[in-house]
Image (cartoon, rainbow, N blue to C red; front, side, top):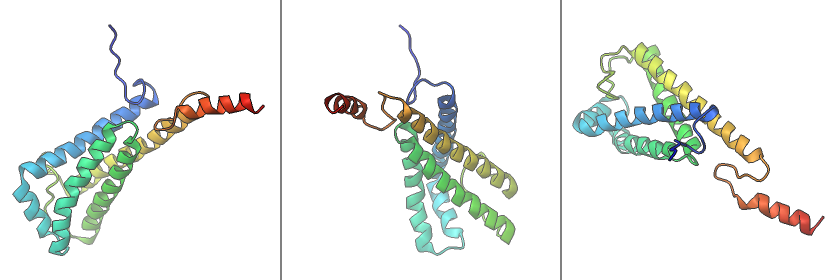
Amino acid sequence: MKIELTYGGPIKGMNLWRFFATVALMGLWMVALFNQAYGFTTFVNGMLKHDFPNWLGYTFIVLLPLAETTAIVLLVIPKTNRYGFLLSSAMLLTFTGYIAAALFAGWASFDCLCSKFNSGWSWMAHFRFNLWFLMLAIAGLLLSLYIRKQGSGAEGTAAEGGSAKRPIINKILKTVNP
């Protein structure tokens, strides 16, 4: 019996690179979620230390884990992974922009509670790390869109998330109405 690992198709070529981007981003969000859940009090206190109003901090306390969980779920499913890449790109753009503002405006005194593994990093190292993951999320989104477009161009095959009936119906209509 042959077992083949698939992710919206065989994992080779462009799909292999999309799979790697998916796994890397899922790992990032799972580590962040674990640290937020494990050190929930520290996470809440850290959010409330920032220079924005407390109501916004409480909003982030709820929305960040929810957005990270949503990104993981969307990334896992091949038909929705482009939305996971899009959400990941938006979150990473926001986080990277916030760190850039902190670096260039001199706010670098606040603590980052993203993860315990990068707590000793400088803000510039943290910025580079986020920038790398932002580029990875954008590359994953572009790969996902490219793979989806390639799948929709073939006659008789369905695009990822598309209808498999449409090509068959078109063939029937062509034979009925020449």
